[in-house]
Image (cartoon, rainbow, N blue to C red):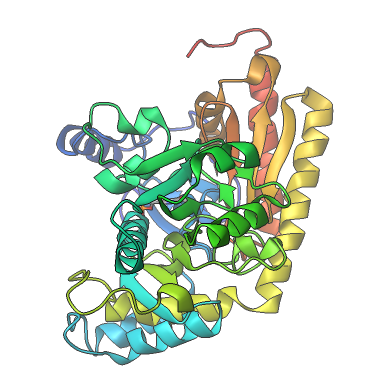
Length: 432
Ligand SMILES: *Cc1c(COP(=O)(O)O)cnc(C)c1O
């Protein structure tokens, strides 16, 4: 393509070497003008990817430590996913939920076989999966209890989506401001605090919805025993135990589900989405025996839910994410990433801890580094590595789970050079 430089040699284009092309600048300004301004995309146009690397329209290479927010867990351009997509695209795109289609049936069966679940509801996003879970919990309680039993307990710092119900489940004021009135029936309590849970839960509780590791809230894992404590209270109050594994699930932490790190906890509902389609939109609510028959014909639905192309791809994703080699790679690369962060910390003293599990890690900024996660992300981008933040104080790493030693080392070399540059500015801390 004219004007496009191929940079496959693994070297970042030095900052300022030529600047964005006219086409790239035109696309950025059109996007800035034409998108509803609820996002603030970086001023570049991503154009292609391979494994853990991406290139923008001008050929600048980036190591991808964000995986589209835990979505492209098998990296970019996996040939097996592309093959499954092409095969299904030539066969059938959509059947509606009036009919069965083979890839969707098989995916449901394989998800149940791989988990605690008996049944699956398919949708297209995380918020929809949680919306289904919220409705399921209410319906389940309504069938055997009086209507007072409708409260759902969630946790401060959690994140469950942007629809009106899921943003209400999201106990963070910044996501709710201006959208009131919020639906009633949600109770919030402090994460990792059993006493607070005991104060919030009761006979009116129909479910507890919780992330085994809070993602958007700062990469905060449930402490040992906390999920068990929730499970015990759910049992005592006949409330559904619902894990939001939209970010932490599907091998992200080195086990297929993050809640499996807590011995003996069996949920009633688990919601998944992000990684399931390898980059195609698909979400699912997995339901265990207790509530498997709660929804009946007419209870709930989604026109696009259970799309055959997304399901055909998701079957391959699931098979790959379940493989022992992949899970071992998550553990090993997670350790390597931690080691490099710790070594860098010993040199420039920028973090108080590294939180998380497997390849869901948060570096918690300290002292004069605190509050700078967004700004540091931009420095990283100039150095050819894409990282995420989780609030102003946490640099978040969610690389592809099949990342290689060479890709991880290359990305960390770039991260280190970015942080050394940021450290070099000494006391030049920017406010905000
Ligand atoms: C991303 C996310 C959601 C929302 O998913 P969408 O696909 O953006 O609707 C819900 N819960 C958690 C834990 C998430 O990380």
